Amino acid sequence: MSFDQLQAELDQRERDALYRRRRVLDSAQGPEVQVDGKRYLAFCSNDYLGLANHPEVVRALQQGADRYGVGGGASHLVNGHGRAHHALEEALAEFTGRERVLLFSTGYMANLGAINGLLGKADAIFQDRLNHASLLDAGLLSGARFQRYLHNDVASLEQRLAKTTGRRKLVVTDGVFSMDGDLAPLPALASAARAENGWLMVDDAHGFGCIGRGGRGIADHFDLGQDEVPVLVGTLGKAFGTSGAFVAGSSALIETLIQFARTYIYTTSMPPAVACASLASLRLLEAEDWRREHLNALIARFRTGCEQLGLNLMASPTPIQPILIGEADAAMAISAGLEARGIFVGAIRPPTVPVGSARLRVTLSASHTEAQVDELLEALGQVIGAQVIGAQVTSTQAHGALPG
Image (cartoon, rainbow, N blue to C red; front, side, top):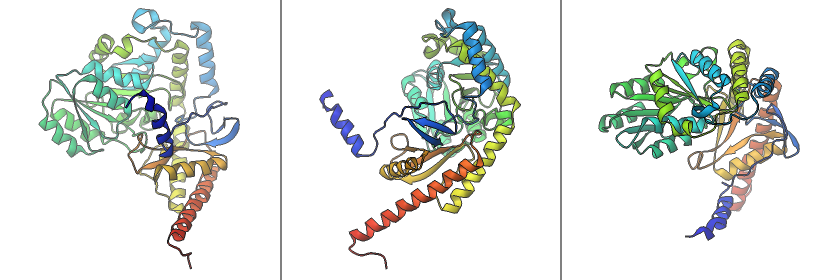
């Protein structure tokens, strides 16, 4: 097969209902958005606390740009590590209860940098089967002996840890799994790692801001400190509403990453104005508990409504509320039906999720209202009900009879 087959492969992907298309967003993030020139009620953003367009965050970005300009100008190790970056790192270290924090430009780069800065061919890495692509890619790129344990299965992990030798053993997991919304069993994972003299690394991209005391994330939710979770990763582009990511841990960990994390050493720093905006988000996140309280009330309301509709809702206590559909074409049809009713919800298909587990990934935000959640539930009942009736009619016609 040569490069001449690219278009044929794309055509097949479209026939399999797996083709991805970009949509153009013409508005700021919020409950109501404009996409491709049309207005929608949106339930597909990771802006969980509604801070991406908060006036104070926007003002901090503007003031930061006025003071520091737009670009970082260079890598952190040349002359791109600004006062705003340093202030944000210190504030995040205090927030997470860790000795130090290191900023990265994206969550993908934070995971690549942390894993490849710590591991090499003499080491071993153990990953949950449902970990984010950035974690899996980082493990493969590291050259370490790579194993995946069954999802949230501590016994599966323990078996692999006990049978594998290596200079270092790193257990890696999402904190909140981005497509399922469930939590990793961190206390048991931490114990398993420590029993084999290993470290636990947690990517808490979807937990920071939403769970734990004051939104401190899943490690705080389970009351685990730096000793139990030596490598803690968080992103700023979700609940914080801005952009970038960080690794939190001991001073020795952070100094190691400064010396060896290629995605930190060889890239331009994030714009300092974004660091200013992120610091404003952190202050709001700490001060306004009502955002998490309202969000939790919306989650409960949505789950109750889905149960009443008989929908196959996955077990999640987080703003990520996936409705399991099954086949990719069915998930796409339901998403299109919702869009026709003015509601924007994405259909998640393989390879992002396993074959046969396509789903609607509903995400809730503190900026949604109860009435908007009720509107979503009503539309789901109408669209999925119509899909079920259509499937029954098709099946009956195929067998040559109509229901009596």
